[in-house]
Structure formats: structure tokens, C-alpha cells
Amino acid sequence: MAFLLRVELPDVPGSLGAMATALGTAGADIEAIEIVEHRSDGFAVDDVLLELPSNLMPDALVTACHRLEGVRVHWISRYNAGANLSMDLEAVEAFTDDPAHAIDKLVDVIPATFRTDWAMALRRDHGEVVVLRQTSTAPEIVPESASWVGIRKTRKLPELDAWDSTVLAASPGKDRAGKRFVVVVGRHGGPEILDSELARLAHMVSLAASVQTV
Image (cartoon, rainbow, N blue to C red):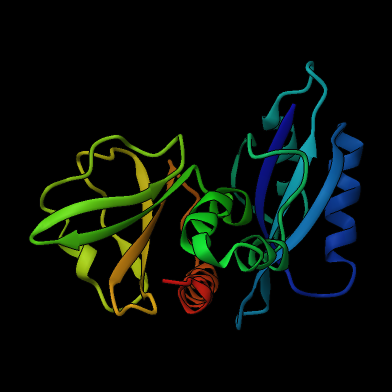
């Protein structure tokens, strides 16, 4: 079974190796490690994709990590987006290869690229919220009071009753025809969306909007 572990650890030589050794000793098979954020306080946040045997509980990995000085697990959950972490470059290639549908392609690759549960692109048209594209796991109901559809800056969104227990973020864009849209992403239960992830999302949306052909 594949699991995704988000962990905070000291940003010093040897720290990542010690964590990998601890996870391996606990019985996990590490498939990939991606640095999510280097912080100014001397710590880093990493995502670790793991394969666990059926007889190993995820709690064992959390315990193994917490035995290491300065290491803290933010979140661990089943990972359903595939066997590999998708890098930003692969995501960019996905929508630049099909510029006529760049925004649609971006929405499709966001869950694997950002480890979110879903994504959708929305636009307000004559006062109504219109869904331009959404992944199959996205909520079917869009709140009518979604005032954030008109935001001008990428940011986290407050939890919405209609999308309970979901960590949300949104990033605005404007296509070549001058039509504004917003891309919304959601994670069920966490982890928190980091500032570095917001910056990446804003960059991706801006790129997709710039290559989208009318």
C-alpha cells in the first residue's frame, strides 16, 4: 500500500539520511522523497512516498520519525495518485503539449503534482459560478456564495460548510481572451497548504493561462 508522509526535519547534512534509515528499519520501502520547503528557521519540510507491507501500521512510521531529534510528522495518509511523485516540469509539459486545453490539463495534473485530493477551475459568468473543469473526485456542489471566485491573489481559503474537513487554496488567472478564472484545490483533512505550495500553484496557473489558446 502506498502512503504519503509529510515530515519536518532539521535542514542539516545527514538529517534526511537518518530519517530514511529510520523508516527503512521500521519496514517501509521508500519510493521517492521531494523537498517541499526550506524554511528560514533551519528546518525543511519533505514529502516521502512509501510502500508499506499489509502487516505494518502507519503509526509505526510516525513513532520511528519522532524518535529522531527535531523531526516531526505533519501528516500521513494513503496515496492514491499513482506510484510516483509528479514533478512540476512534468506538469508544465502536460499543458504546454496541448495549448488549446492548457487550463483543463493543468486541473487534471494538479492532484498528482501537489498531492491534493481534487482540483477545479471556475469562472463567474453573468453572476453565476460556472465550472470550467474539475477532476472526478471534486465536489459536485459549488457554493453559490463563492465570493472568492473573483479573488486577485493566490491564497488559502477558509473551510466551507459545503466542503467539510477540506483544506483549500485558490489561485486566479486570466486567459488570452481576458477572461478571468480561478483554480481551486482541496485536501481532505490536511496537511496545511504551505506558502511555498501557494507560490508554485500561482506560477502554474499563470503559465497555463499564458499558453492557453483562444
